[in-house]
Length: 393
Image 1 (cartoon, rainbow, N blue to C red):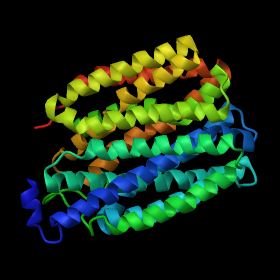
Image 2: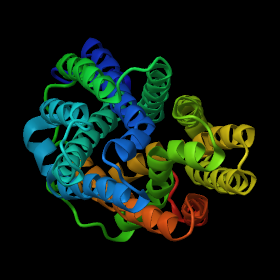
Image 3: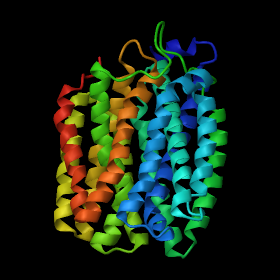
C-alpha cells in the first residue's frame, strides 16, 4: 500500500501517521533507554543482593521466563486492546518494576518482580513492534530499522547516563527510581500519539491469537533466537565482563555498553536504505559474520581498546537482525501482525531464557570470558541460517 492510499483510510490521514511515527520512535527510545540503564546496572544488582554469577543468572532467568510467558497471550492482548492501549498498560507496569529493582529486601523477593518486569517488557515490545509494522504497511515506507535504531539510541543514552551518574557517586537505587518516573511520563505521553486501534488488522481470516511457530515462522523464530541470544548476552553481561575480566571501573565499563548500542543505532538508521538496495539475506549473513569474528577477537585479546572496538563492530553486525526478521514474520500469510511477532518472539525470548543460566553456569564453572563464547556461537549460527531467509517481495 502506498502513502497516498493510506491518506484515504479513515482516521489514518498523513498528519495522524506522521504523529504516530514520532510517538512510536519515542516508545522504542524509552524501551532502549531502560534496557541500557538495566544492562549498565547489572553489577549493581550483583553487589546489592550479594550474588555470584550463578545466582545473578537466576534473576535474569526470572525476567526471561516472564517475557516468554507473556508472549503466549501478547498477540491476543494487542488484538483486543490495540497496540496503543496495550503499550500504555505494559509500559507503566514496566517502569514501576524497573524503578523498584534495587530496593527489595532480598534476592528471594526480587525474583517475583523480575518475572513481572519480563512480562511487561515483552508485551510492550510486541505492542510497539506491531505499531511499527502497521505504520510501514500503511505508508508503504520502510521504517522498522529506523525504529529499532531509536531503541539503540535509547540504550546508548541509558548506559551513558548511568556511567555519568555513577562517576559522580549517585546512589544506584535513586538512579533507577528517577529514570522510572521520567520514562513513565514518556510512555503516557507517547501512547497518545499512537494509532487508535489496529491490533487485529491484517486481512480477513488472520488469527489474532498466539500462533504456534511452524514452517517459515519456526525458521524465522529460530534465527531470532540465535540473534537474541547473542544480543541479549551483550545487554546483560558486557558491562560485567569489562569490569571483572578486563579490569575497568563500572562507570567506564558502562561506556562499552554505550559504544555497542551506539554502533547498533547508526547501523539501524542506515538499515532501511540498505534493505532497499541489498538483499535482506545478504545483510543478515554479513552482519552476523562480523559479530561472530569481532566477539571472538574481544575474548581472545582481553584489551580495553580492542574490547571497545569489538563492541562497536558487534553492535553494527547484530543491528539488522531484529528489523529484518520481525518484518519477515509479518509477511507470513494467515497470521495477524501482532500474533506473528508474538509467535517468533516467543522463540527469540527463549534465547534470553537460555542465556542467563547458561552464561552464569559456565562462568561459575570456568570463567566469564569462556562463557561469553556463546555469543560467537549464536552469531555464527545466525550467519549460517540467514541463507534460508526469504528475501522481501
